[in-house]
Image 1 (cartoon, rainbow, N blue to C red):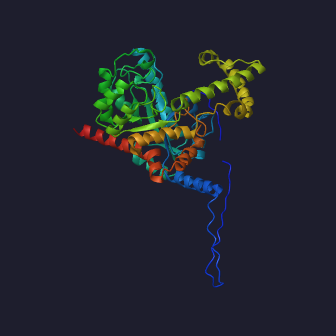
Image 2: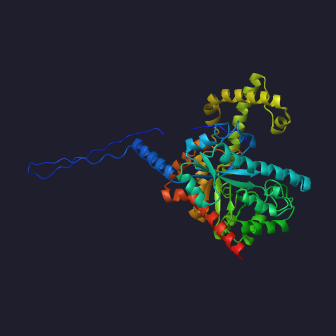
Image 3: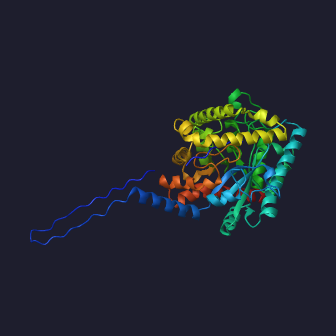
Length: 449
C-alpha cells in the first residue's frame, strides 16, 4: 500500500441589458433581455444536479483491498480508521457498494505455498462475513446477486461484495472454486503479479519470461468451473495472451475489475484496444481504475519525485531517515511504531508546503485525468461496457478521489462532462450488475445441462 495525499473556480458575473424602441407615435416600451446565468449560478446548479444524481444512483467501487486486522470486534470499519474505505467514509461520500478483496500474495507453486494461501483467503472471507453479520449487520450486508444490491441499498444500508484477486489459493483442488463461490466470491482473477498455476501474469512483459504462454491446462479448466458456478472472470492482472484465451473459452461475459486504457497510458496493467474491443464483443465490462500510475504514469512519477524530495528534506532536518518497503517490513513491532510516528510528523510538516513546493510544478493525477480514461473507453467500446473502480487500500487513490469520502467528486466530473443520469448509473453500477446477472444466468444453464 502507498500513502496518498489530499488536494481540493473563481467566479465572474456578466449582465447585459438591451433597450428596444417602439414606433414614432410617442408610445414606447422597454424590454430587458434576461441576464445570462452567472458562472456562480451555473456551478451551483451543476453541483445540485450532480448531488441529486449521486443520491439516486447506486454507486459501486469494484476493488477495495482489506487487512483483516481492521475486521476485529475492537478495531473495525464502523470507525473512521486510517483506511481509504470504511463505513464512515462510505457514508460521507455516498459510496453504496464496496467490493472487498480476498487477495493473496503469491509464494511457491507447491503444496506448502497453496496451503498457506488458502488459509489467508479463508481468513479474509471470514473477516468480511464477520463485519457484515456480527459487527455491523445494521449498517452493511453482503450481496450475492444484483437483486441483493438493490434490496440492501433501498433499505439504507451499505453493501459488501467479495472479489478474489489471484486464484493461487485454489491450489490444485478445483473444488475450491465452488467453495469460494459459496463463501460469496463473485469474481476471481487467475493470476496477480506473478505467474500462477493457472495463468501467466502481465508482469512477464518486463522480463520476457513466461510459464504457460497464456493459460495452463488447469487455467482452461478454471474458466469452465467459474462459468459453471457463476463467478465472473477478472482479467485485470493476467497476460494479454492469457486474457485473449479466456475470451475464446468463456461462455459468459467477463470483467476487468480495475484496469484502464493502455492507449492512454502504456502500462502492462492496462488493456490495449484489441483487448478492449474483444471485451465489448464478449459483452463484458472494464472497470476504469483510479490508480495514478495507470492513468498518467509520467504525471504520477513527477509528483511522486517532488513529494519525495520534500519529505526527505524534512526528514533530514529532523534527523530521521525514510525507509523503503523492505526495510520497513524488517522492523520489529516497537521500531515500526516509532517509524510510523516519525512519518506522521513528517507528513504533518509537509502538508502546508505541498501546494507551493510540489503541486505548483508537479500536480498529482486527479479526477479529470481519471475521467479522461472513462471518456476514451466509452468512445471506443460504448458506455455499456465501462465501469468505475478505485483500488483503494491497495495503491489506488488520486487527487479528488483519494478515499471513499470523496466519491461524489467522480459523479460531479461526469456531470461536468455531459453524462446524464442514466449513463452515470450505468457507469457506477448498472453495467457491472448486468454482467453479474448474465454470468449467473449462464451458470444456471450449465448446471441444468
